[in-house]
Image (cartoon, rainbow, N blue to C red; front, side, top):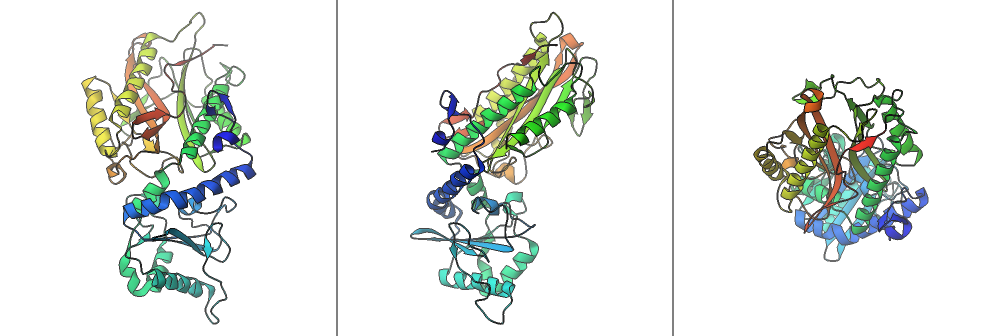
Length: 441
């Protein structure tokens, strides 16, 4: 179990992340086997697909391909075609590839047909397998609405259609299958996400410590680069450059693209009285985490943040509660968004909700609950239903005037990892309940 590999430092939450690379590979390969055996048959049935073709080439990777390859494969090799056939016995994974592919059965040798090029022979092998399987629906990764399900390249699509001949009439989009494959988490994967969330929180706490954040010297840009370097040194790959911003009395936020953005220059040192905010994401074991933390730098003589800032943060946590209260299996992302916005309006909360699935990818496949610039619904991903055993980054912001700052508006951003279960929403790690307080020096 992952919990055995990741010793608990506090309670039953595993916190020692990441594992050594070799141990990570063992865990990931075991997860892949379990996912192929236990998850994929039901997901293919649910999607109505009995043959799934995933093809990718070096430097032209299908986003799904990496989730099916063994951990020692960091990319496709030449052209790698995976064929997953649903039969009465489960799912048969087959590789039409020049090299052996982990748990997949080899189904092609590049020199098996004299006189044919390797490319012709490879597509001919796919055709032979399809002839034998006689599938009713052949899923391929093409989708106008979901980028993760749109990984089949134009040229590979053309060659596949030509190779399949009359079977090409049975090609269908595998979008539903891709979304379900990418969003569904095993129990051990959830344990790893909890560990990753805790580790990112540790790194942010370190960034906010006096040893790193030196008031009057350290800038937002300095902190962002420190966070990225620290995560990298720990073996946690950042999936975006960390965002650190400052808000300050007398420097009101600026309107940009329909929202408000902090206006303190990124290269200005942090000062007493500043509101410091960071957005940090990192990956390990093929999974991603994403969270935000806000802190107030105390002025000399202060022991607490101004009441207006504390109240603004409380509004943010209230909007979190309103959002999670609407997150129920079966509802679409757009339905959750509309219900949350209505509930927020009833309480006069001014904000935006832009929560997203998280797991294999940071902005993962599945139901989007708003985008910061799409608050009336998200065409495509907003129509996907929420499912149990899926993880989300509960991301949102509120805007509020701060009396102590002369009524200046503050944008308070919050983000936490959560898990949707059949019984409700659970936080993956410790939820930030109030502003962090940082000493002035």
